[in-house]
Image (cartoon, rainbow, N blue to C red; front, side, top):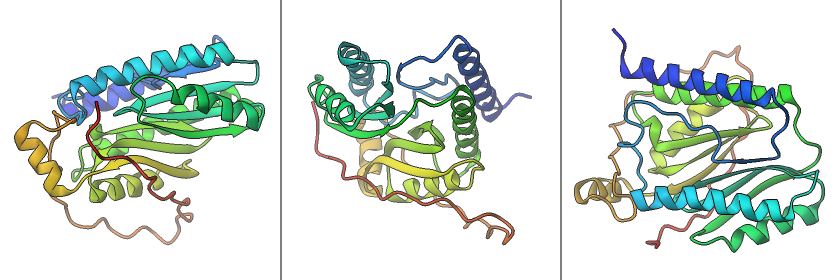
Length: 251
């Protein structure tokens, strides 16, 4: 019997494979949204409002247009928007390019904030991009296997071995998702771009249909603490602090 978890894991694997095939055609300098994964319950567990989801799609597309207007051969940028927060990852040739890219994206309609994680340096190689895609798939599968969080409440993207977790979640959920991600082989760093909400606010949003997050679901109750890791494991990668995120109502 095929379970929802099995379907999700298959979808993740299929998406990763599709991304690898697409990458064979050459380096794509601009990517929007990362890899989308379709599957059971992906929409119903999204804590963004339907309006925010549409805004995120528009932000990514308009942002891509703005970047193309200033692009040069040294720019390799991925744009990911979640609840109107725009994450920039990838590589650029100079610090000036990094600043300029952020400046044009801050002027995109409906963007609340821009998280600039661009790195000045050479573009990633095909093996590196393939490894990032593989890591993203492993992280998603690991989150899906966890019983004490809703995996689909988080969006995951990887660049250069750094995993970015985006979402609307409680601090407990965020810490748990970070813990799981840090335990995945190949992860060098974890950056959390998460809008933190309280358990009470999340429960109220679930009852009322949400304010700006109309499809919020309350997190599952915390389960028993995971067993201690074996002493033979390598040290966990460093964890980035939670960024300051605006939690006031948005348009």
